[in-house]
Amino acid sequence: MIEVNALHTLLNCVKLALASAILPTSVITNNDEREAYHVTLLPEKYRNMPTQFVRRKDLEGNKILISFIEKIKENEL
Image (tube, rainbow, N blue to C red; front, top):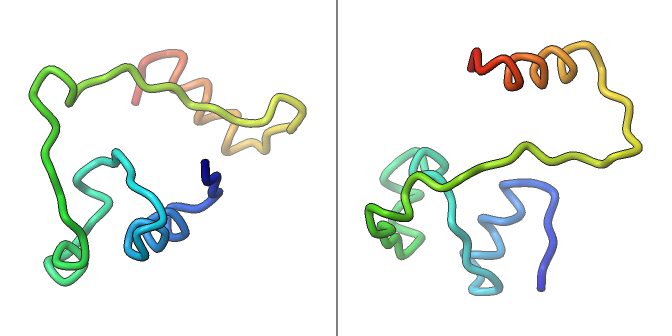
């Protein structure tokens, strides 16, 4: 298993055939990037799956992060 902490790193691992990933379509932003990958759309029943925001438990959040989390909890995003 490969763990990465940046989207750019994950995409490079996919490009080098070290990994595969399930990502939103919006991650690959232009046609040049799209040509570097084999993209398969998921079946309709798997396209809207539950998603969670995850972060380290012992990290204190800054004001922006705390505000973001509050908005998520209030369903304002």
